[in-house]
Image (cartoon, rainbow, N blue to C red; front, side):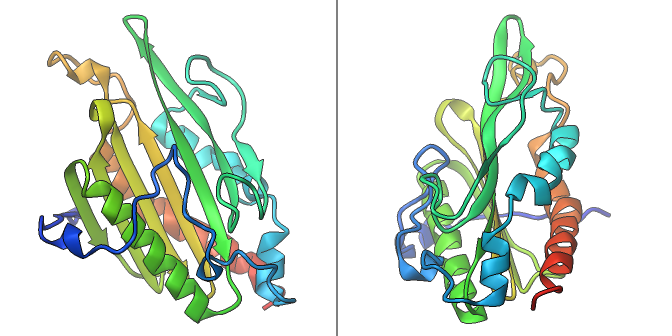
Amino acid sequence: MKRTLFKTLAATGSAALLLSGCGMLGGDDTSGEANGGDDGGGNAVYDEIASWNACEVLGNLQPITEFMGIQGYGSSTSAGGDPGNSEIGNTLDPAAVGCNGLIYLDVLDGIPMNGEIQVKIIPTESEEQAATVYEERVSAAESESAKWDEAESEEFGDPWDQGTIVSWTGDTSQPNVQVIARDGQWVFHIDLYHTQDYGLRGGSEPALAFTDEDLNQWFVDTYLPEVNQTVNDRIAEVA
């Protein structure tokens, strides 16, 4: 039986959150030292991850492309293109290397279904720093979700030291999800939103290749373990 990932955030819990949300359009708050914004100080693992082309390491997001049926990157209205690579110090999320972009899913009755995705690897100098980065990003995601509808958050573990998936329904009924996980001294962060499935609005057949519940389950059960293995195999050469 497929386990249930989510539990609804208690209304009282949102008041205890310390950080403001870091939604997709606004970017992450990564200016603090805890977010790994320094130069790594010669730390081998930090320097290795910081040197990566994230799109190359993550296979140009092909597994996500296939599961979601993404038809295009870099445009919200047309097919083709590839996600864009971002290096340490970028304006989107300075502490991370990333593979990101607008996504085009499909069109229904002349209306495009689209969104945006950021997939990021955040290196730090120590497990303590990574734990702080993880907690800050989870708090920010939960704080953002608490502003909207259907906010849900659930922790997950193995093969990660820590992991949390946060989802909510945002502006114009757009599904949002952030998946944040830590292993040792690095953090992995997916930040995604997309338009609702327009095929379901009138009780018709789904127009998208996935449901949000299945996508979120797939992130945790399948995609993240694969990423964990890929990244750890690469840093094992320098660690």
